[in-house]
Length: 568
Image (tube, rainbow, N blue to C red; front, side, top):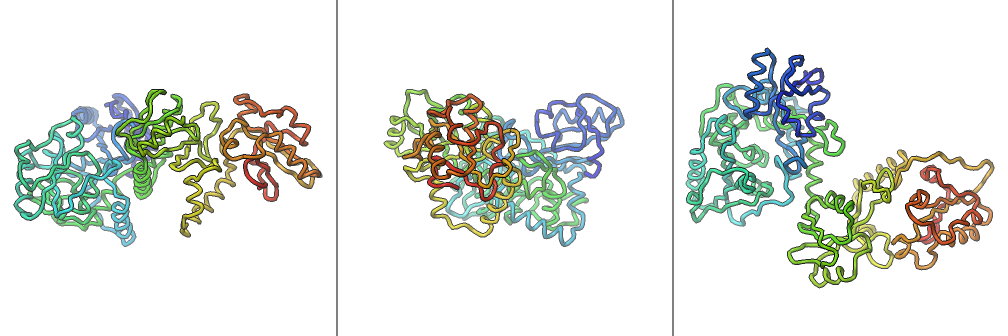
């Protein structure tokens, strides 16, 4: 939409503003809520009843109406917690309405340059590599071991069905023909997730599905495995037919969805004249996934390419899949409970009462760091449940955890904890046993450069700059800690106090200029100072309570730490 940048878009139906990402998806256009005439166009959502009202308003005011819909790659999940990350904007019609032209139809018919064809091929391959769908639940639907074809049901009342020239009777016809066309195959009927969750009805009754070769897929899970393995896919107007084309499957259409009528599908209905010249699959892919949608990345909500969105959602889905399905978490405060649900987004996290122990039906137990109570750990061990140790990440936040600043990273370790020298950890295993690729090492080097260049630290506190004293040849930084911290208990069997560390450094570096930096939680009064720490000034040349620690990290400067053997 080349005119989007200069547009003022009226939003008469404010209900669509429930999608929090809508302003960013339409940026830099300006959204003007309410019934306003001083706009360039009115926005309507698809073919909903509210859209009909907006169309009548547009006719009355002489304003064009642009229709918007979720993109073909929408988000990880569905609902308010997962707003759309891709949006389809159409100034001519609606992509699923075969009764009239749409902007998508126009884009599909445009000739492609060599670069555009190559990009479309890469996008198709990336879709399959990342195993994507419109929404992307973590688990795949089970795939039969035997040969099968896939029949896709839809929600009754879905307006894409009549606007795709179909009716409820076409679903029964589709099922009958799938059985007849493939007499030696199982027929898997994929039920729409809204039907499974009780938000809609499907098109098949129980008696329609009484057949020895019919198997029901009514789990609401991801369809990628079924689309990858099916010998053919049967649809009325479902988007899964388009996804099946991306997987290279034969697709039988009993309605007229946006991808039908171009010579790419086996159609039971005659295509409209405007589609009968036929196009290549790459033209369809380029039009539908590259030229048509507006995308934003899930993290910054800034405009991005479809490839960036595909890789990001694919990564999110894979990371969510690593999380156990059902987790009981012990010892988390209400503030940490909220954050644990964020970081274990792929899990059903439960918080039992403090006196309880892990129950049946769980897949894992979560505890904070090394604070798990022995009875909880013993019960988890008896039930052979993995114990996930959760702690702050190395890049935690902008601000202190003790101030209840939400973390941007946590680590989840199934073996132990990175600061516990008494037992193995996932990090140790990665460092010791992992064979890193050249690309991974290059990525690590780039990350290191970014961290150093942007002066990123664990807490990223605002502080005054520090100047090296004039004429001093050697400066040694001594980093203080909260002495009750678990990293000292589990990582410092000998020297374990800040004062003791300072005294040891003074003995080892009698001529150096010693700078002691207390832990920021201690400086802020959120945690107690260490034993005897009030006399730290006697053992060093400067106690730095306000300087920014990133300015102290220069090459050649030594840093003394209590729980790390030697100095860095």
